Length: 106
Image (tube, rainbow, N blue to C red; front, side, top):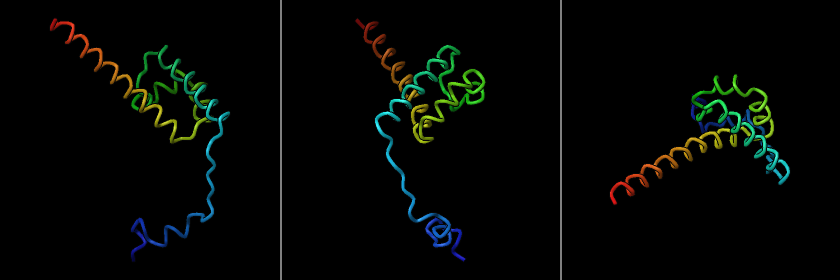
């Protein structure tokens, strides 16, 4: 009756108890970052900022770079870096606008 609840025992029984997740080592992190940088360079060449919002466009424009990126990085990292790319861009644009406003006031 309560199996639909997220904390119910029915759901937990289906999950493996001894699931071990290892943290990536220095080499695998470097590999991830390199493939991320290559993917983002390709996106820049095709004027694509948001690879999550424009996923189809990004995949078509940079198929091999996207594949390597997703192979070399954890899926949570892939999503995080794509979101961070947009957030960093928005931050840069905000700072530029603020600097222009400050300059124009003088």
